[in-house]
Image (cartoon, rainbow, N blue to C red):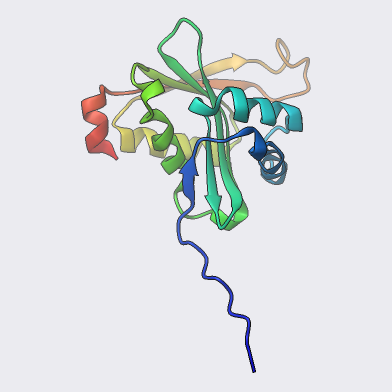
Amino acid sequence: MSRNVAKPRSSMPRLRKPTAADGAQIWSLVKSCKPLDENSMYCNLIQAEHFSDTCVVAELDGEIVGWISGHLIPAKQELFVWQVAVGEKARGLGLGKKMLFELIERDVCDDITHLKTTITEDNDASWGLFKSFTRALGGELTDEPHYERDTHFDGHHDTEHMVTITVPEPRALANAA
């Protein structure tokens, strides 16, 4: 009697730069990670292709289970993180923080002095992630209302706070990770 033996699952997702072929899986992951705002599949495809140097996917057994989209802010030494998504299968592994470190340790981010993101006041998971990341990094975190409910969102979305994390000099980063 032959038995099908399941291939053992990897314990930790592999982190890598995304490709355009990842766009549909990224879109599905973001859709499954409420309360993240959904973008179009085309937007995620463009992010994966055009901004691969400042985006990260986490892949576990051929499935994308984590995603960070980001970009360098023009004419500044700042990285803006747009979205962080961690799928249900990969939660509890510290994956969000690992992906953030993967991103800021890339050559393209050598000169950044700040990491920025926006977070609504009630998004406890994001606040927890970025505060934990800041502690591990040895940086400083500040925030202030930025995109406001009535001024920018016509009352349709909660105010987004601009979170600014000071990134220490590269030699300090090696000790933080």
